[in-house]
Amino acid sequence: MKRVLVFLIGCAVVGAGVIGALIVVFSADPLAATDLPDHQANLENGKKIYTIGGCRSCHSPHGSGSDALPTGGLVTTPVGKFSAPNLTPDEATGIGGWSDVDFVNAVTRGVTPGGSHYFPVFPYASYQIARLADVLDLKAYLDSLPPTKADRADHQIPFFVAWARPLIGTWKALAGLDFKPYEPVSSKSDTWNTGHYLVRGFGHCGECHTPRTAFMALDTGRWLEGAPHPDPTCKGDVPAIDQLAALTKDTGEMKYPKVNTLTLALQHGEEWGFEGMADCEMGDVQTNLSNLPDGDVKAIAEYLMSPEL
Ligand code: HEC
Ligand code: HEC
Image 1 (spheres, rainbow, N blue to C red):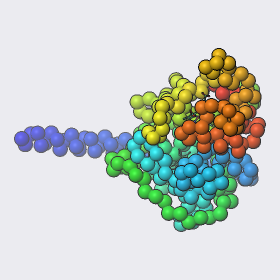
Image 2: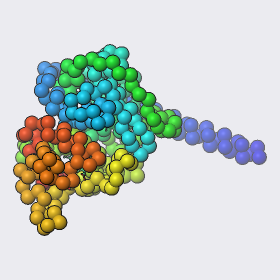
Image 3: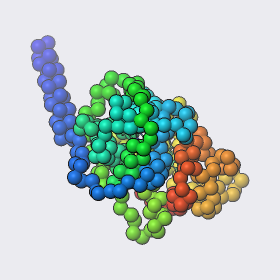
Image 4: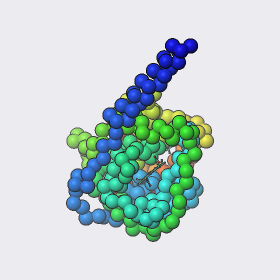
C-alpha cells in the first residue's frame, strides 16, 4: 500500500515537473515596442482589416448586425463558449489603455499584455502572418471608435480547459506557429498574392475550411479541403474551397466558371442566387466580404481559383 502511495506521489511530482518545464520552455515570446516600425496610421486601411478580419463577428453580441460596435460577444466551440471581450477604447472595460505593442502581441502572437497566452479560438494562428503596418492601422481604427463601457463576460468552459491556459505555449510550438510575417510568392501575380495574404491571414478562411490535426492545428497538407464545423450547433461540414474552379452544379454547369463569377458570389452571396454561402457564420463572413473594396474581393477570388498554401 505504502509503495503504491509513494509511486503515485512520485508520478504526481514528475507530472507537475514536466508540466512546469513545458510552461517555462514554451513561455510567451512577445515583441518589444522597439520592434515596431515608425508608422503613420491609415484609418481606411484599418477599417478594411477590421472587416476582413471578422473582428466584429466574434466581438459583438451574436446577430447584432454589421454596424454593431465590438463591445463583446460569445463564441461557441466544441469545448464551450468563449467570451470575446470589448475592443472599444473604453479604459476600464475595453482596450483603451493598451499600447501599440500590447495590441500587436495579442493579434499576431496570442500573447496577453501580462505575458500569458490567449486561447487560439481568437484566430491569431492565422493573423500571425499579418504585416505590422496593417496591425497598427487596425489599432488606430479601433481607437477611433466611441469608447463604450461593457464588462467582459466570463468564459463558459470546463475548469480543466481554463487551467490549461499556461500550456497554450506548448500548443503554439506543436502547431508550428512561427510568427513570421507574410512573404509573397514571386512566381504569382500581385493580385494573387493579395488574395493569398487576405485568405491565409486576416480572412482566417482556413480556420473553418481546413481540417485539423490531432493537436488541433490546421492540417496544412489538406489546405482548404473542408472540415467539420467548429461550431457544434451547425449541421454538416464546412465545404472544401480548394477546387472551386472545377466545382460543377447538379445541372452539370460550372458553379464558378470565371474569377468574376466567384467575385460576385463572395460580394452578393445568396441574394444573387449563389447557393452555399449563407449557413452557419458563412453568411456573416459574406457580409464582411460585401463591405470590402472591390479590388480585394477580386484578389481573394483570383487566389481561390488556384489556391496554394
Ligand atoms: C473566431 C472569433 C474571433 C475573431 C474572428 C476575433 N477574435 Fe479577438 N478574441 C476572441 C476570443 C474568444 C478572445 C478571448 C481569448 C482568451 O481569453 O484567451 C479574443 C481576444 C481578443 C483580444 C484580447 C482582449 C483583452 O482584453 O485581453 C484582442 C485585442 C482581440 N481579440 C482583437 C481581435 C481583433 C482585432 C480581431 C480581428 C482582426 C479579432 N480579435 C477577431 C475571438 C475572436
Ligand atoms: C466560421 C467558419 C467560416 C469561415 C471563417 C469562412 N467560411 Fe466559407 N463557408 C463556411 C460554411 C459553413 C460554408 C457553407 C455555407 C452554406 O452551406 O450555406 C462556407 C461556404 C463558402 C463558400 C462556398 C463554397 C461552395 O461550395 O460554393 C466559399 C466560396 C467560401 N465559404 C469562402 C470563404 C472565404 C473566402 C473565407 C475567408 C474570407 C471563408 N469562407 C471563411 C464557413 C466559414
